Amino acid sequence: LDDLGGFTPQNLSNIALAFSKAEIVDVSLFEKVAEHIVALDDLTSFDPQALSNIVWAFANAGVVVVEDSKLFAKVADHVLALDDLDGFRPQAISNLLWAFSKCEESHHRPKLFERVADHVVAITNLIEFNEQDLSNIVWAFASAKVTHPELFEKVANHITALDHLGR
Image (tube, rainbow, N blue to C red; front, side):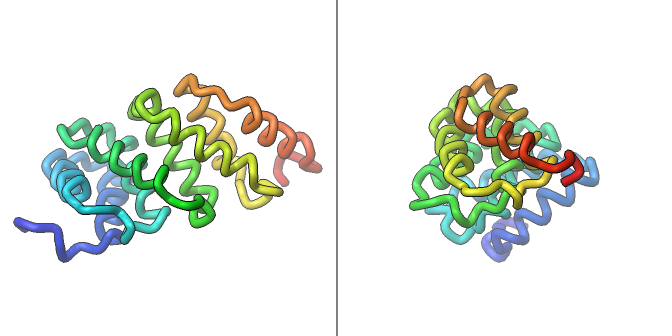
């Protein structure tokens, strides 16, 4: 294929995720996907889960392509430009932060971490966040050396309020 224009954002997300989960690191494929996404005018056609799955797939695969930083920058800029993050389900938040931290892109994007943390802190109840979501979120902040005491307090309060750690 010369052009990925026929692939929907969901198609691109599924392809990157499938290759990553299957542990098939085809650098040329990841490079082509990254180049395509970076070349788009904007990412408004990507839903939050597709965006988080794409960056998660790149981070999980450990792929290092020329367009990596540009891809992560484009995703970060898009998320920061959103009016709100209400469309991001807990798994999308968790995967997004984990990916940025894993690829050491977090130090370039502290505003992204702050924006996502402020969003999580503003959520009335974290009941929709499962154990993996919560642990990945705080791990991402700790690993990235990004501090947000209110986020950690919110997570701690949620966990201590649980009747038991299995919910």
